[in-house]
Image (cartoon, rainbow, N blue to C red; front, side, top):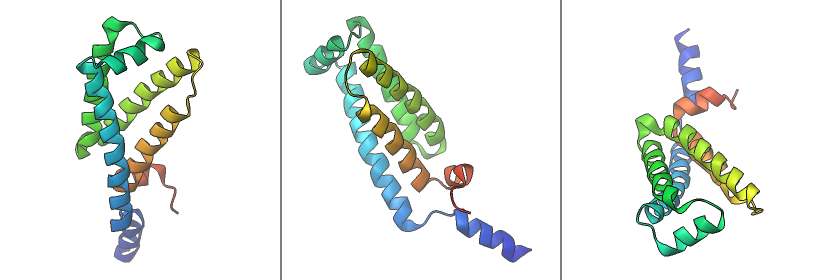
Length: 135
């Protein structure tokens, strides 16, 4: 019985290449999201212009940036990374809706959502177990 449990644990453990690939993917996503959040928080001119073009009211941009910043920080911290990924999925769902309404391509926000979960899946044993793609 002990051998069976050990074998099952090994199947769900994260290998070093998967762990580092997940960390790299997650780091790229985190860097981009933090850059975007800070641009909204400090009200950088290009960011404000882009948001206004999409029909986002100017008085909501800072709040959106703070929300994105907090969701990204949750994703960054290992113990809260799943909550962060769920929150970022909701945030990106809103981005998809806004882009779709504005007639812009939505593939960037969709791809980012996939990358967030892929990075988490590759670096987090609990998420691997949850999705159970390996038999």
